[in-house]
Length: 174
Ligand SMILES: Cc1cc2nc3c(=O)[nH]c(=O)nc-3n(C[C@H](O)[C@H](O)[C@H](O)COP(=O)(O)O)c2cc1C
Image 1: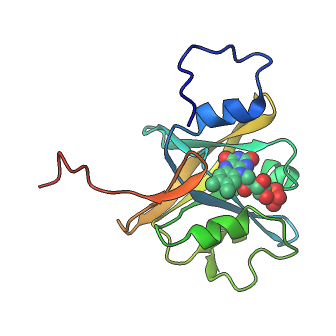
Image 2: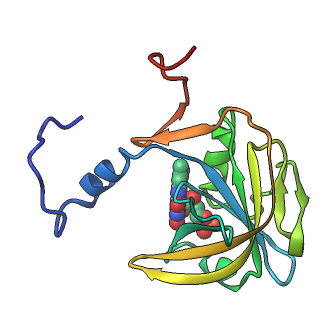
Image 3: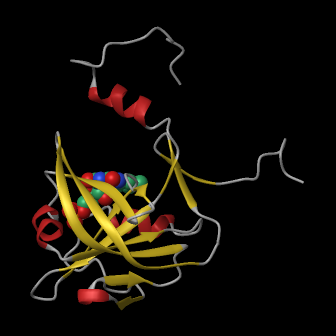
């Protein structure tokens, strides 16, 4: 951990340092899935997921322009957000690495437009792929939630480049 607490200039800084400050924001972990027109299943790990609006029910996530799946997600009518549970760090790693068929051996069902829905995740949101915005070296996807389910199980947490589990706050827990 850096003890240099002076304000640094972001422009021209070491990208690893920028990653370091952004990683201070703890997130959950999702696998975002879709299905191409020719039936190929696509999935990737993302922690950029966020809620946007309740009425209408909108969410967002961002995808690196360099990602091989960019064209597939851009063309998709729907995608699903699969929110991973505390024990699913292996699935997170699996979907963050290239593979000829990332779904081989991964338990899942098919949802709207063939979108893969992973079994036993904490929450599933099936979204219509509404629009995309430019976001520098990423593309920001906005989805409208059409269907959802959630189990209330413990989530997987990602913080400072590490997988973690959530704990009740000791000062607030009864
Ligand atoms: C915890 C975690 C979170 C990630 N979040 C994102 C993200 O939000 N957006 C992104 O483009 N890549 C993210 N990645 C990297 C992608 O999962 C990785 O580049 C993946 O291989 C892309 O899939 P593709 O090669 O099939 O396109 C993340 C990786 C990890 C391990």
